[in-house]
Length: 558
Image (tube, rainbow, N blue to C red; front, side, top):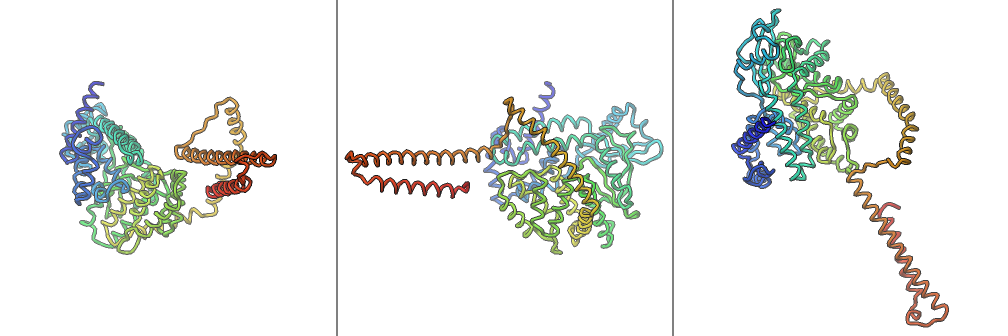
């Protein structure tokens, strides 16, 4: 326990020194960790002086130096253009997870620890030269005893403890920020960190990455144009992953090897069709499709996907609604887009639907267009999700990952050939999926499933009613009311109590007037009876009566 606390304290100091090094010490002061300058004033000054891009560069470099948890946080923030200025978002999109390699002695010790025998006994040949190094693991070439060439990804020693410590620190900082700023509560900063924590925990488990690789391989087993490396499970553990070695060209190096326009169009088409299949048909897709994770084999005309540490999962209903939203974007149909978002998200009861519709319509009309005057699919999805978050519409985290994947794929296509338009490439596949959706047989199956669900619901109604009545009889019935609903209820009570008070005042005044009338009738002459009470009382009572009617009609609750 003491060791953990000391490690955490030392890590706090490292983080603090890097924040100060890159000129962001005031951030720590503002959340109550250090005393330097004001966060609000400094950020305002950066933007005002036109230094947002330079500040974004410093943020990116700082996050890369802080390590994997902070790099992943930056990647998560790179799709939150509703939260950060566009210049900073663009810098965060360039985040790289590359660090110097760990000495090979430590890597071999890790292999010995995992398999219980030295690397020389596990593999026929193990290349001590690292061919790729990231903050979580590094990759070495090797040969299995059966002669198979493989790539061995080994987790960096001690990285789990570092990452878990960083995640705890990020939780602390997120809580402090939410305590001090309303905007942090509005954007659910702590939920964002929890989402990040879950994603990194999965990425630290190479056994899960192996399962993910197997699943994607099954998706394309009948497609000779898409290749996914085979996993050698007997040479893999939760911290070591051994995969089939595949030689290919990384897509960010493609222009150096492929010059033909037709072949570039073919590669882009493969890329789009594979992701449409993964996202909208299978509901299981590559969560980090940057150019280094996609290869091309010119001789076989094959696209190769590697590194499935991050994957996205979409349920059947999310796939259905995502397809509707994308087709709405392609067909420039605002109503279809809004309807799809409402179906797959949590929408607050007090949302201004017309305002949100107008925002979506504005995005559809004003979004940046490509040279071919085609809509940018990734940018449109990003803007739509930003608008949703501004209206407190909570989208499933899987949709956020989908948006990030689409933006990355679109960026790759524009690098391959700027004249290509992702919308025009995706439209035929989207239309095919929509035709399949409205196939009479499939529609019949969906209708039958819904009928079964409805039958189950109706059948359960008597039991549910009986349970509610039983709880009410025992005094155990509870109601949950949201804060917005409480405000509306209190407002309604206010109106009712005011109108009741007004009515009682009118009744009391009428009784007084009636007393005066009775007194005048029996001939008791007083100063009050000399007043024309009937006329005055009638005028006042009639005026109050009209005011009550007006108030009720004006409230819209008549």
